Length: 270
Ligand SMILES: C[S@@+](CC[C@H](N)C(=O)[O-])C[C@H]1O[C@@H](n2cnc3c(N)ncnc32)[C@H](O)[C@@H]1O
Image 1 (cartoon, rainbow, N blue to C red):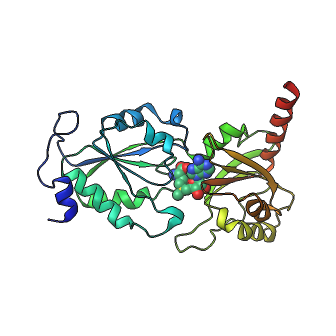
Image 2 (cartoon, protein in one colour; image 1 turned 60 degrees about the vertical axis):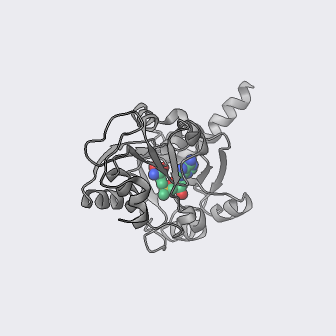
Image 3 (spheres, helix red, strand yellow; image 1 turned 30 degrees about the vertical axis):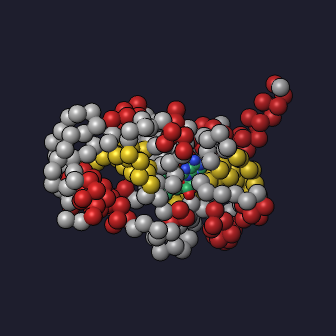
């Protein structure tokens, strides 16, 4: 029996916090959304309210943790800046041990768990261990940012398609972005802060106009959200100059022009 099994009481399904006994080991994966607790789904909120233990990572905003009942055990399993402080295998083992111990287990992930959330790896590990999984989707940061900045990602005057891309490949190098940005397209780049210079180079060598606008949205939907409007050519300078921190994403494309329009309208009204 491992130390984790001892911690969670493996192989002896016990009473859950609401007095029921879990039937078979089960984990509920919940999307926390981009930060504003009001953006949690009702199903996600209910799962959190009845959980015995919640495993969360660094993208889950403190405001969401604040709404958990005080008797829910919260375990941080974050990997800030993709560091290896806790391995994916360790996280999976903790989930499995807690579920086998009969607890109601929630795995809480930022945004939508199915978008750049490594959910595939956790699903495989949980299934292999005989643990059932429920998935509650969340609002991904791209759509959260679109709402809070009022930049419609598919404004009909500017874009007929939208793509979500991660700047980071598994091995750390820049992901392929050729053909994803430009006329009639909106590209939302996740995990791009440390690759801003490489992104600019990739866009320019793909023939993208350096003047194409980019919105950098930091802490989208949170009280401390920041929006910086720049261009493809100036992207890395804007990131460095404004000391942009994670979490942040880039909206690349002509739709960003509507941010300025919304701003001007608000200023005119004031
Ligand atoms: C590992 S991915 C997880 C994405 C998440 N599953 C989602 O659906 O939003 C992490 C990246 O998501 C983006 N992100 C997550 N939350 C954000 C927020 N509140 N504001 C801006 N970007 C955010 C950032 O690009 C960050 O580097």
